[in-house]
Length: 490
Ligand code: FAD
Image (cartoon, rainbow, N blue to C red; front, side, top):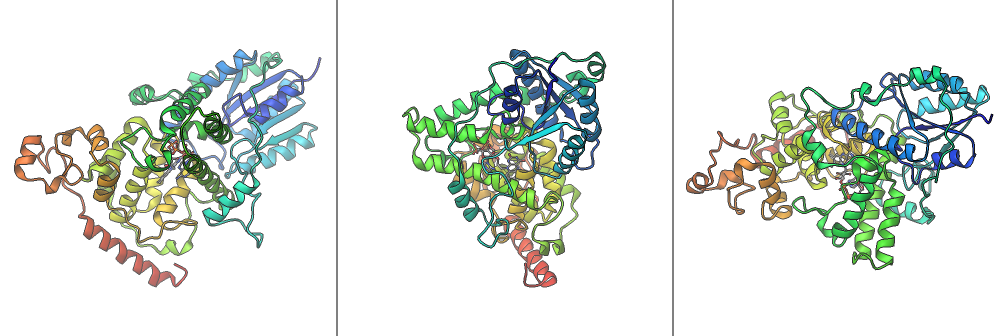
């Protein structure tokens, strides 16, 4: 009998445009598919709660997709370094296929590749997560890119215009030896979904996890949000972005599929979106690739300032401020709306992520790592590259970061990007009755307006925990102190 081949799924939970799965199918050998929940290896950062919830749905959906191809998904737990070689041994697999990863876990992959090859097992890895694989593009002087625009230009020049791969039509299923079957675990046994209390109810109502759900969201976006994306993507009150980030994180869909479908929608005349809309979407996908380049080049971006001058930053210890921010009780409606949207749905609009992050880092002077950690636990799209790189971008400590003195004014951001206050009204219902003229600055509303809107500041809704001007001044003073301590490199 032909020896089976193995596909090791990681953050590529899809069957279409999956080079590892397609290569395994092309061998014509029976195919085994596995996923290992590795919460033991030092290189793997444990997922946050919202991300674990998404993973459950994504694995369930992948299993259904694979079963439709006559295969199924075998689930295991434990350190991948131990689990993978032993399951290969027990299944008699002769070859392994996987799509590459780019964070610290790639050390596990490097070691496994070497060990398995020594044992006579062929290992083939593929690029299946990004448009531009990290480590491939360099500046003219041969160093990794640290600035987005030249990186993106080089990436566009290097882009191949091949069609995304179709899903395999069928997979010759491999019989699973009893001993191996005994070692598999049921999805429920992974305890990825919350039960008591079940805090995921609203998330369940907001999202469809899995490959099919991802393509539905892409389709809806191309139909409704793509036209005008270049300008409207900044409006949290409108459904103007793709909401694809969790699916891209888990690899339910690829950025190549997204870019390809967007291009096709314009070229075929199906979407009236403009070239500018396309370029804007392609640029956001480029930022994702850039974040991965930064992760690849600086493995420690989750914990270490890329600009080491920020090691001298005088952060404040402020447990009360952090809790007010986390719960959406800062007294700034736009910040509070964002933090509540995050808590309830596992998502926050990009502009509001920038505003809330800036508020924590600059108005409250709380170390960006506390914010990164909170997002890591609460976002359904929590991503090791995008999250850490974006937090460092806002903090000013990252590569090609926003200049430190760019301190978002939450009132002006609200008035510009949520002009009628609809976004705030949706997530901060206790002030929904306020007129649009003061919805982003309730403390300026007259006593009669507050009364007729049913708002009692300091009781039904908090007063600002720090005044904007004072927060800004304090942040600038802290930055000056850091500069004087760390020298001109800041
Ligand atoms: P769209 O506007 O439809 O964009 C399409 C895709 O492009 C997104 O799905 C995403 O994969 C990518 N993208 C868009 N904006 C960015 C960006 N600024 N940087 C990198 N990639 C981008 N994104 C995550 O996927 N995971 C995170 O953990 C994450 N944490 C963030 C933390 C902070 C403080 C900030 C400021 C941004 C963070 N982002 C993160 C980036 C961005 O906010 C989200 O990717 C975006 O809001 C997702 O919404 P969407 O899918 O509708 O985006």
